[in-house]
Length: 234
Image (tube, rainbow, N blue to C red; front, top):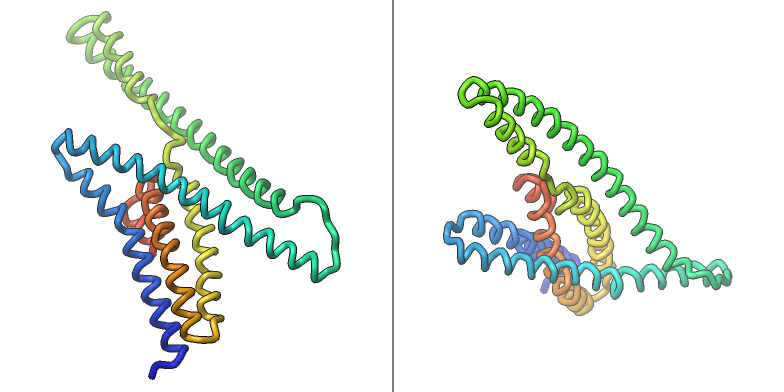
């Protein structure tokens, strides 16, 4: 007969394996899309990927509103009761909104800095390329064609979608969910009976698998490399 410590160890190992497999599924799916040469099938895959991204956003929103936010309220109410404090101000709501705005501000500052750096590099490279293109075209086709050639190079080099699938946003989300997972692991470890361990495992792994899949989908659409994505998911 296995004791409760052995059961807890098995549960945590199984939880890690299931979580990692679920988070790796989007990586395999996106790799399959890139290897698909049929334009029609590739287009359908892109639509499916877009729908899954929308679903992942809903999962994260639901996790925040239905799971994390009630925990914040409960812990703050418990803290107030222990210190015999009465407070009518919505502290939990303020903390959540303040944290959201803080992360949003940090992200916008970083993205603005990256955008300015990339635009400066693009302008420098474009002007250099335009000058070379002008000289080459002037030697072969005359000034009129050279001007058109330089205009095309500049237009092609300055179109960037800086804010799409921000790596910073993905890493902050990864950090938040990792911290949340630590407390889930502690909750499993604090159970006193095998039945409680198994019951909590079934509840946790159901939503943890969905969140892991959504996180993997978010990470794989960021600007991180495949190696960085795999390392982050582990």
